[in-house]
Length: 575
Image 1: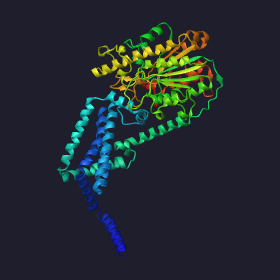
Image 2: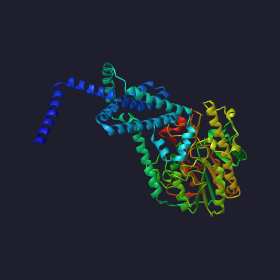
Image 3: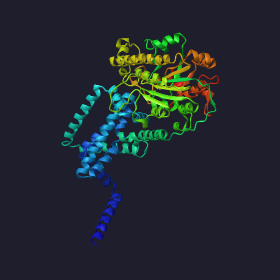
Image 4: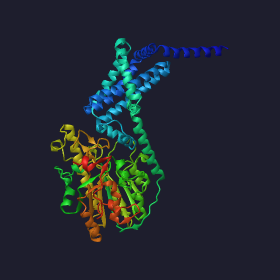
């Protein structure tokens, strides 16, 4: 009977509550505002910090673009959501309330600082492309990246933020809000946030740093799962229509983060490629003048460079046949020699290809905690060793560290030729920018020596050597930034060198192919079609091969648009 009586009493309270809402809505609304006001006063520290953590990225990003109206709009967006969180927190008690508040604030602060860092370097909120790069990067690379972009201003900002949090905590215990002032502005804040954010729904994901991460993380995880699928279940369904010319040595040098805009071979004022300059002057190199990469980051580029996937494809990149399976099926022994990482294999497309090869070797075992930098010259002994154990037909890939990351670690001390005083180009003239540019140019200079030494190793053989990097690099050429990303890219990140070297024996044995290569250097090209060019060079044919996609083919389609993330490079980026 007691339980029944309590149930009836609760039902009566609910009934009376709804009755009051219907008969006296003004009183109900006033009570709601009073409750919200009370929550703000009691949870002032929590709500204030949440507003700061979630508003700072908005303020920073849109102020960088001088979009102050959007920056102010960012103040309203999270308000209703944070007030609602405050209401929930306020209903809790004891340790659960305390620990939940600390957890939410800690996560929000970490994500806010991360987003501020990303905005500072990429001028955008966190995107799927950035998350994919993080997934494909191990701890050592992450530390190198942070070290590369670290500045004392970040540390000073964090110290000021921590002091601000401490002071806010002290003040929030004593502060008494002006009831009239809050009641005046509170309805406007809440209603604006409600109708602009909650009801449209599409703006809800932009409210908090956490919700802004949801979509890009979901996309990046989907990409990671797709990669794991290719890594573990990649099928070899290659069909060979024609095994080709049986060229004994095909060598592909895969560079890293190398922009042709910093190579004297392409007209750069500093002599950064003296050895290739000399070879080109002696007509020993075919230097292609207008080649771009399909992406401005390694994973994106390699997905397309070594497969039949391109921007027109409707299937997934990992559903396409790859060059390594094709070369093996055509009777070639395949080699992968790398100066890059050996860890984090499930998230590294390059290693997925390496595992398809007959022979793979790395310059060293690199654990995540190691902070060591091996020069690309250490690849040469691995190459000589592989050449001593070669087959009748060989396909070599040499994966360089090239000009990646901390540029000063990409060359040996004897290649420190350029200094600040030499750097007169570039949009930014600060000492820091000039130092970075000088270091990058030294890395290009060292790269020139390694690439030409690899070519020299095959000089007396029947061989063709192709050199190109995965993508380019922005080094204060067109914006205040050094690095690369698909987000807010510059043309420096896409414009790459593409160079072919053919030996005298190759020229004599395949004069038509050599002539076709020579006749193609002025054609525009994007390397998502590279697989077609390599197959055309070797004469290998598969059902997927298209002669219109091979730059050396007489039927090459020069009218094909070079689309980079929905942008027509030639119309929107090239000039």
